[in-house]
Amino acid sequence: MPAKQLLQDKDRKFQMLFEDHPQAMWVVDPKENRILEANAAAEALYGHTREQFRGMSLDAVLVSEEGGTPSGSPRRHRTSSGRIIDVEMGRHDIEFGGHPAELVVLLDITGRRLLEDQLRQAQKMEAVGMLAGGVAHDFNNLLTIISGYSQLILNALPAGDPNHYSAEQILKAGERAATLTRQLLTYSRPQGVQPRVLDLNKLVTSLSTLLRRLIGEDVDLQLALRPDLGRVSADPGQIEQVLMNLVVNARDAMPKGGTLTIETANVELDESYAGRHLAVKPGPYVQLAVSDNGGGMDEATQARLFEPFFTTKTSGRGTGLGLSTVFGIVKQSGGNLDVYSVPDRGTSVKVYLPRLDQPAAVEAESARRKVAKGSETVLLVEDEEMVRSLVRESLVRAGYRVMDTSDPLEARRLSENYRGTIHLLITDVVMPKVSGRELAGELQAARQGMKVLYMSGYTDNGIVNAGILCKGVAFLQKPFTPAALTEKVREVLESAGRTHHAGE
Image (cartoon, rainbow, N blue to C red):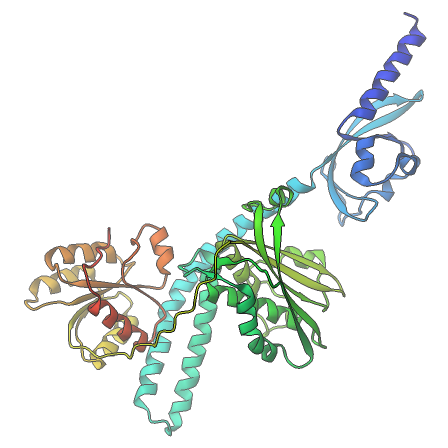
């Protein structure tokens, strides 16, 4: 075969391979940094025709990045529509039209980079969440003391006493601090929730009056609620917290006023969406969207939105826990959320919760039972001295006989030496030497009728998931007030049936 025909066959095979290859490819002039040819896959990826590609400088496609990009690293490219994609480029020296050229093979890794970023964010949030959970546990012990003693003082002071107002302010501050602590715990780990089948339209409507007061007169609240909205399974208190946080953020983004829209809709999240978001399953969802026409955010700000303690608000106006709390609640409810924002044009946060084909739960009207005093004998075991003193004083004031100790080993001796009936053991869950669960198991073996109430700065779901307690045990989460304590004590003492043992 003549050499010229051999070269023509080689060029024809290269042309066929280049044209039909599913990977995007360019032929580039390395000296002038211009694109000489592009294949059909490159047309599809970038949205430019081959005629537009020919002669185009690579600078027209590349997105400049601060500090440059190390050799071999993925580059950011801009498509004809302005969309930014992450691309890995492989270069190979070839001859094209009798001149030296480069064959550039382009791999779109935008989806992969997105999943990698989400994984890194999830790992970072998990690590900070562990720290947040530990801090919240210690805070709950302190808040139990602050809220508890301030309520005892309030109960002892007449309304006209000049110190009554001061005690009220201490109690309110404790309640606000407890709210922040709950946000930390919601962010740090899944919490014990009470999910119900909800109609989000009813929830939004019932909150609308409060929300209008919250945002002020210079912000116009618009509701766009789909009439045939599906139902979701979630804790109503948590969803209210999500909505309140999103509305407050939207209000703060419009300091000079504007329009705030709350919208609901039925949506389908497809395989493509699930492929771009970790732990999202395709299927039917209900969308809850909160949108504003405020200042919007740039990409750098959006990348940090869900970090705990990150805030764009001025000092003293934000804790940086609002959106991280929203993130934790939505993920815990099996959903997902997306943020869409453009500087100077506004922001829209869209929450997606799995859709159910069930009627919403009917609200049950139940009157709050009055706290009754008691005369039973209680054994109290709590290693935090000030918390123990508060619990003891609260119970004694309510008429109970109380034996208390900080040491689980001493609690054994008290139980062994006491000849009367011990009706209730109140014990902290996590203690040195012996855990509350182990202590309860030992004492209940000798005192079959004794009931147990556990208390902890961690949540009931958190300690159950950690294998420390089983489901169904009586549990009181710190911080609590004396009223909540005595009400729970009566509930446990008056509960019918067999007492759950710690390890069951």
